[in-house]
Image 1 (spheres, rainbow, N blue to C red):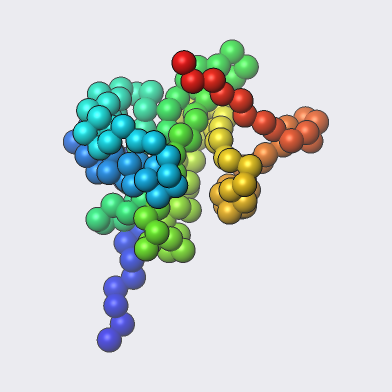
Image 2 (tube, rainbow, N blue to C red):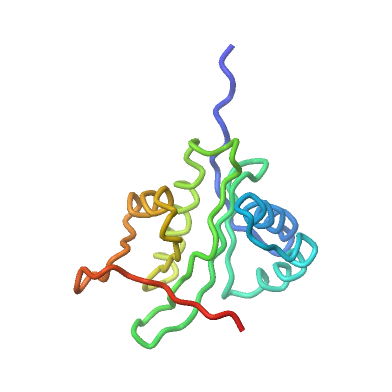
Length: 157
């Protein structure tokens, strides 16, 4: 007997999904040994943030096994907002089933529909798998005008 194919549906998450989004984000940080404030703190923040137009989350699969978190901001160089893909995560046992691609495609579709001018993603230099994934979906790690490698700098306050 052939099993059912894995669910690859993607939906936009709302404040009621804060606990699911928080769990996936916490699992992401835990998997990669990155500090997390915990699911309770993340859930509380997400309930507030997801009620506002500047933060979007997408859930993939049923039950949800993947998440994309996007924030929007205005920018003087563009007519429309600029989106930052803050996080994209798929549970290890569901990787290779096109959930990441489904998340990216839905995010891009919504961004185009909503007049987003650019999407930015920060990827760690050693994470070549993520770099290849994003490049496969049309993103570039170089300045389109000069061809120079792009860098991301940050300072936590």
